[in-house]
Amino acid sequence: MSIAILYGLCSAVLVGLGLFALITHPQPLRKILAFNLIGSGVFLLFGVVAHNGAAAGFGGDPVPQALVITGLVVAFASTALAVALLLRLFQETGRATLQSDD
Amino acid sequence: MALDAVLAVLVVGVAVWTVAARDTFAAVVGFVAFGLLVALIWVRLAAPDVALTEAALGSGLTGGLLLGASTRLGRTEAEATGELPGGLLQFAAATVSVLVSAGLIALVLLLPEPAPTLAPKVAANIAATGLQNPVTAVLMAYRAIDTLLEVMVLLLALVGMWSLAPDHLWGGAPGRREPADPDGVLTFVAQVLLPVGILVAIHIFWVGSVAPGGEFQGATIFAAMWILATMAGLANTPPVMRRSLRLLLIAGPAVFFAIGLAGFAIAGAFLAYPADYAKLLILIIEIPLTLSIATTLALLVAGPPEQEPQR
Image (cartoon, rainbow over all chains, first blue to last red; front, top):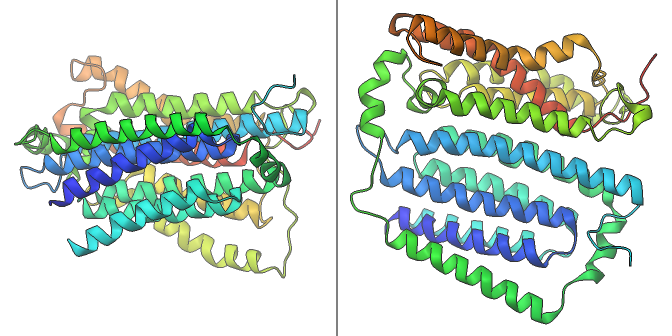
């Protein structure tokens, strides 16, 4: 088994785990965490594809690698915004839950 | 190979821990460890630039942000565990997740051989950029439009975050003012680490043209140093109304955009650089861009304005 396939399997498991956590965890913060797990899995999949594309003396295809760097920064920005929304909700209602009041 | 197998198992194990841990704080700590292990995977996948970004941003800043949030939410997080969904929903979620994983596994096993790659094209044209690090060349030249849009996204996220401020706090400084403790351990660590960290950040930024590193990695370390200074109470966050702060935030994207527009006149296309000046222009973009990204990242961690504005 090549390391590309090994880490490919790893990333597939991470996406599945993250998806499960995103659906089942009631706490919004845990959902944000799960969203980041899915992100890591997807980025690693990009890394595997980049690794397979090694050519011309580069260890991997630099184009997907650069896309992952862009993706990591955007994932951070959305996480920060989500956390800010959550903390504001907590400030307003004293609770941090997605359940409605009725 | 044995190392890779151990690493893969560890990463999945820590990921399971962050999902299964009862305590949110423990889960976030697990996530930080997870990020550092994933950075090692990136090294193994011959992507050191991504490894640096993952360690600094994916694990470090994101971890800090989530740790801060979990301590603030505190007790409510534990109470919410009572809202766990029923068995049927858990079963359905597990089924969907397993199906998605299985689909991805099939994709991984069926990846085309030989893999499609743009590496030869990058190698053929890299001389025209004057850079030697192919990832930086992609970020700053071939796919400069992605990078430009990305810094815009960062700014938009910051605008969105600031707009969450309650009316009476608008214009104040973000986050809480940390009291300075001159004899504290954190103050000492911050004082020792700050100059070193700033040098490391400049180095990582500067070597980005020839070796792993670049503006995002350097900017993240700058941001981390600034966050450390505010945490230790050595500095306060600037009020969001301050004009110099606003200028700092938009300087990078503005210079980037202006040079991109100038590309129409001097090289015939948006964001195109004339071959003779490519490296110089990229450097002129990168320096303000790094400062703008660092400021934006630090303010995204600091959060919306929470201190009374001084009028």
